Structures are given as C-alpha cells and as structure tokens.
Length: 184
Image 1 (cartoon, rainbow, N blue to C red):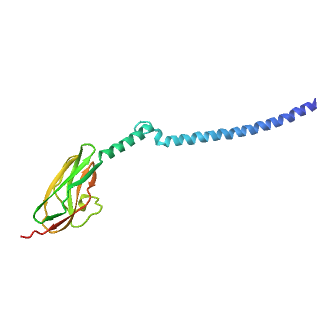
Image 2: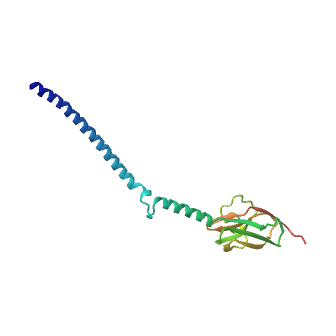
Image 3: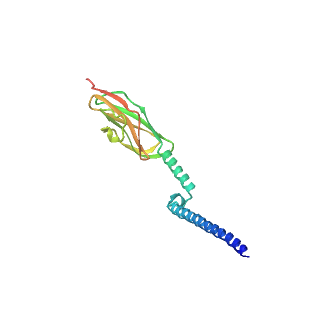
C-alpha cells in the first residue's frame, strides 16, 4: 500500500507543478489581453474619424469634403482673354480695350480692369503689381467689358486684363502697347 501512496503522491506532484505553470501562462495571457484592450481603448478615444464633430459617418464626411472642394473649384473656374488688344497708339488719342471673362455659371465679380505699366510684370500676384489701371468694373460673368484710355506720354507699355472671380485673381496674357507722340 505504501508503494501505491508513493506512486500516487509522485504523480500528484507533477500534476500540481503543471497546474502552476498553466496558471502562470494564463496570467500572462490575461495581462496581454488587458493591455491590448486598454491601449485600443485609448487609441479609439483619440481617433477623430470614429467620432466626427459634425456627427456624420467618416465616409459621408470625406465625400462631403470632396464635393465641397469640387464645387468651390467649379465656382471660381474662370478665364479672361483680350478681344481687342491694340499694339500701337498715339499720345492724347483714345485707345480702346475689350476683354472677356468666361465662367461655367453666372458668377459675381468684384473687380475687372485693364492694368498697365512701363515695366513688364511676368507673374502678377496682385492688381497693384501694375502701377496704372483703367476704369474698374464689377458685375456678373460671363461677360465682356470695354474701356477707352488716353495715354499722355509716349513709350512702351505692358498691359493685361484682370478680374477677381470668386475671390481668385485671374489675368490675361501680357500684351505690349507702343505709344508714339503724335506730330502736328
């Protein structure tokens, strides 16, 4: 009988040791799962796309932002061109300019004019880059505009048609006007 008890007790010890290893492994597994849950909970609370400020689902929000960007681009899409672009004139004699501002839809403009200077401005950033201008117009485009100016001094002038459409400045190509002194 003693031999049986010893055999049973010997077998019991490895079973107990095995249970301790299993409990230790389970504790590591549980600790790992808790760590993942805690970290992902923190990440979810800091991720803006899961809780958009406007209450829309993320896909709807992205779609709306893209649609607004396209609408803004289409709204301000406009072109300007010179219809009548004289290359020569005389001092003290009116010279006429005609330009056209095109856009896909009727859009209000806050400003359009012919801007000119005795120096070339290859890439104007603002209408003040040219030191002189004809009359300023506003209204709606698409449309054509015309202005007649009298230039008093002979010389070479550089000019462009300019407009502000939807808050964006657009320019025609720069042209050259040679003004000669009229004799007689």
